[in-house]
Image (cartoon, protein in one colour):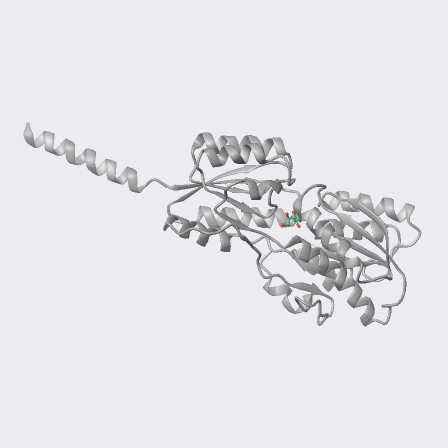
Length: 330
Ligand code: GZL
């Protein structure tokens, strides 16, 4: 009888130990949606980095571009008592209450990509994303320096800015960078500024309407490549030559933009990398070891790619897209 009892105790202990060591680190990710090639690459990179990590489990939610869906997802993560939350917000306002609930639940919060305006009023363990103001500056500076380089630096040019999702920090940041840089190029005349919501379809629609309502457009600044590609479709449909009749500067540096630049239909793309796995994985591994980070937002090194390379933008020099297209990871 005693032997049976000891055997049962041993089996229970073995089970208890295996159950405890098998407890995965559960990482919940509230993603914005699937609006662009950038978003797809960001989702794919983070999902594979987390799902392929030994001992980690991903809880993923696609917000489908709706703030209310993301708020619901964050509250579900709290209910599930996950170990970490990754969060990027479709817009930058309206998160104070739910992110305070995350803090009260004492779930470590990692802010990525589009940071909320309330970031300085909440607790978070790490933050990572593009420097949107610098990206916007680079877009205008590239156009200005390119025109100087072809002897048109003193020629008045009509410029239009196609903005991303209204109220997204990627839009507000890039617009801030765009408008500040415009002051450095007095021959740029801003004749249009409208949101294309970071999508190809809406980028095409906005450019179609501009081509009907604006006499002459010389330069398009599109705050992501998807909108630039949509605009290219509209420009071609109107019988004009994209990349020549209208200079086209995108942002993100997705593969389709490299293809368009190599084909001569687009002039430049300012990089905003979506490959966040290389930041998120080591950061969570360090947090698991007990390390702590301050609230500094970590910005990745990013480049600028164009038809010929060599344009000096101060913080970076452009690289010829055709030279690196084969090595691009997204
Ligand atoms: C930037 C990201 C933006 C991309 C767009 O970090 O938030 O959202 O530039 C995407 O392509 O839709």
